[in-house]
Length: 165
Image (cartoon, rainbow, N blue to C red; front, side):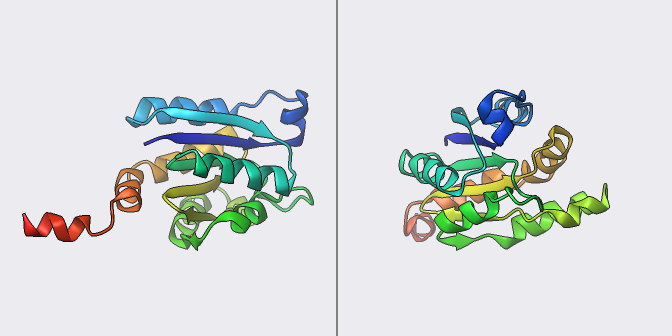
């Protein structure tokens, strides 16, 4: 399994702001999973740039892409639109669970437009840009990710092959 972490931030991409969410995501993944962070980058809030990076990483065999930032109401927050433009199947339960758990902490969670979905054998999940929210969301995600990625990357018919053994 390979993990990609994509921070979406105009100011961060210009070097005007230190990205804290991307490094925090990398730290959590490296500490709490057996998977390497093979790809990490920061891009501005430009739909084509975000979509192209997601496609590039999917094509490179990244199994899990976590995005951080660009999920709110601001006019330049377009990470969900970029994600929707590249995924083949939505996974609404993931985004719903993240919002439901976040609502227990802050009412502002209902302002999240984050989405999650699948492209090929890659699971893409949008997370907020705040380090605090990233940590809270990862607490929700970590228990389900191993099973989700196992299902996603399982070879066709391997379940029936297991049953025949």
